[in-house]
Image (tube, rainbow, N blue to C red; front, side):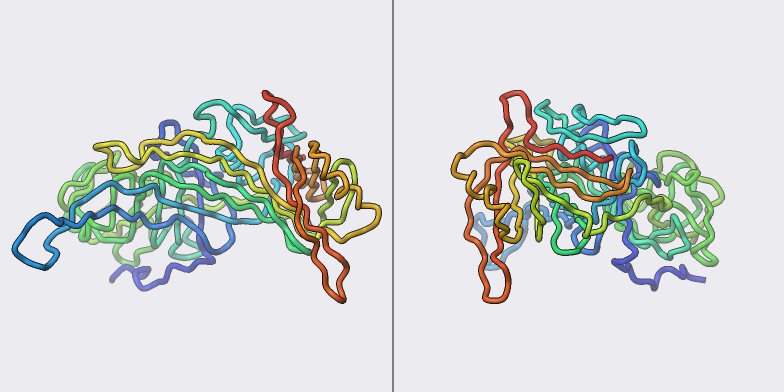
Length: 404
């Protein structure tokens, strides 16, 4: 029988995303179940767009006869999800590694059974790099059996945005770029395997660092060998022969080679949109909409001679910006009248009320100016933009995120 997964579609609602910290920039690290993050539909890892330069030197034909390979620019990625605390104070949220990559590794503080605090860092290379995996499973019940798996290595976080409006649950978005893209699809073994080598029927379905598992040819769903549920990594490819990191067992010709991914573990629940308060300089206001964005200003190292992919990045000038909208209430007007002093104001946005599911965002900011919104039936709406400004040269306190 043929692989009974071969006719299935990759469905967006079934997408699974795993984020893993790298030790060395661009060197793949395998994901585990606890590395999964919950994402909303849309976004993802973009496809690479290698530079192909037209050969335009002299030749007798008017036709384009060849292209010349160039480097591959940094590969964009973005994921949006609900802001989901773990539900247990002192246990970080599912996007923990993304928060570290956005704000800093050395400045993170965990206080057991109490809190997780994320502060901004000025230490060079303190944002680290990530391996991100985006997979589409072959069936809900088949935990490690995937139709397709994309991964991006040497990924870094350029921007992070937390936003909410009305009664909608708060959302958090991370966006960035990465160096090396790996795409893995399903195939069959063509010939008897030998040790760590396997001959693929369609070798183009694999790349170095593809993660695979083997399934019986009879149905394509009975697992033969998944390297003890860690996946077999492809270490090299020559012709149609894949060389794996080790020697699988039990697999045979015509068996299925499938993309591997971890099982699913998710903890915590989204914060209800009705649980949000904001205070500006100690004055409370009822927010209609809010947004806080961190832009790291990262500069990719993508222009080095002899390098096919991005080799790293360095941190640029950091910016924290955002806005808050609220109805114009007489008691809140001193928020606006104080803007012309151009003094720092502490903005505190508190999301959630239950212990273990509270996120407090504190921004030290200078308030900006924007027109109020007017309509005949609605109250006047105040639009309050702001820009983060640290209160001292060594404090880096323009943005603090605390889970309690």
